Length: 68
Image (spheres, one colour):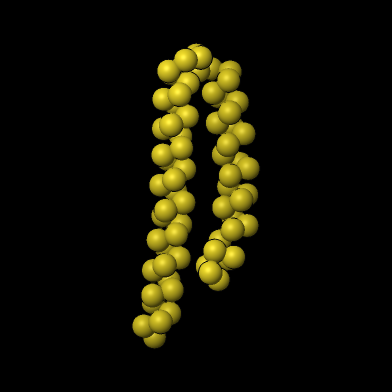
């Protein structure tokens, strides 16, 4: 739980940096319909992968702390 509390401000700031830009691109350049859905799904998968990497890095650090 401590890693969540530690990582949350950075993830929150990253979300505010990424998602407004994604929405700007989506509604300005991506045509409506399935192209927009596919673009947003791709961005969502990328965001989920980023969050998973941050979580895995935090878990690795926690495992190393317990090993010492």
